[in-house]
Image (cartoon, rainbow, N blue to C red; front, side, top):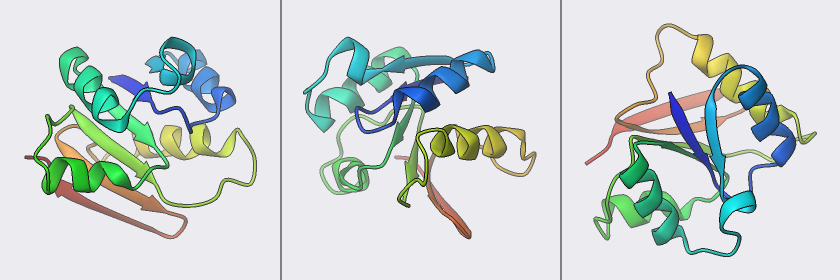
Length: 118
């Protein structure tokens, strides 16, 4: 599974996902300051799931119909530590009943909801 970490995802979490064997590109390392539309386009081109704390992606995909990436994981909580987002993602990846590909996933501390991407 391949991921594209939006600029707002802490690099500590990016590194922990990489250490677990996942292919994670990071906007903060490759192209800081790019627009959300450019992040979506890159993720779609490269077949990556976007990891983000930014709520704008839902509107860009469903309202403005911008290219859909392989998936979006919107973390909708304030992390207590820079490691916490990576820990949440790793926990989701081990849950058999959850599929991130082809879905827009919203994660809150006590709730998860998904809808199919366009």
